[in-house]
Length: 252
Image (tube, rainbow, N blue to C red; front, side, top):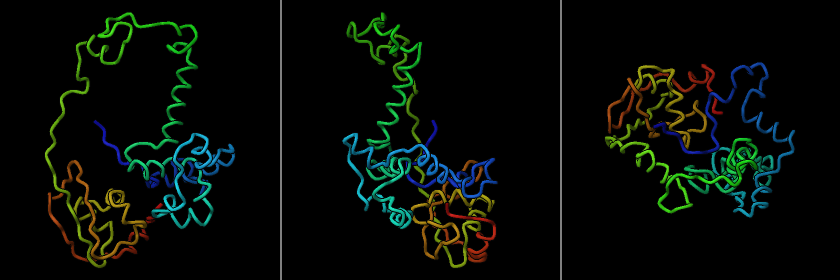
């Protein structure tokens, strides 16, 4: 089973410069390209769509909460938010990032329904509009997914739940002069894995070149590079944060 991170407005570092578009400069960024496409297509703001759907509209304070708040407010995006950003922020604010909010959910649902309706082989197509399942059902004439699973004798298609061993998170206490690259080298034996630690601590690290002594960083466990469990580790100082900047690190 694949595990996903919660939905938020932070883009993965690999999306800062899309492969094959590096020569375009700022336009190689997915965020910049989303803004340009939305502008060219004349997409409405997130607030306009929410009002049209009768959904809860995020307040400027909600939209400005987080590391992008100053930029959002500076360019008036707190009242006229680009639709793509609004959908991500809506999920983060209203549902804790566990699922899309009302605007994002409605757009996704209508997209899939529209695709199904326009498929010539869909049960929603005119040629099949009056088709009904003929297979046996617990309630005649009302065939559900449960009936389909009963038919194939598979009541638990995902299999039995696997009990996972409770693992205490590894916490690293930052010492003066440390960088993410140094911390990755200590825990993973590979300094190039610093983005893993950065991604796991985005809520307290806005810029990977700026970490402070005393910060408590979560160290994710990796296959083949599992740090000791449940320990609080304080690594010795050495390389400073400027070494990270020298290797081309940026926050977004």
